[in-house]
Image (cartoon, rainbow, N blue to C red):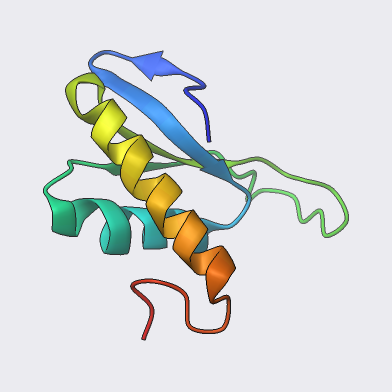
Length: 91
């Protein structure tokens, strides 16, 4: 989870190859805490590539909310590693 790209006032703070994980970070971790977040889907959907990584999905936030968003994601990942079957914010 590093800043990988800046576009305007938004900066990407989280990358994954799982769209579900990117949307979980946005919808469960960031938005409920008042962080504006968007998902950038850069997956190549034109050609199936089961054994290759066809792209990434990332989460971007306004630069002004970057530090808080990164902290929230770190807290989420730490809590998830302590209780993987239930994880934080999961039902």
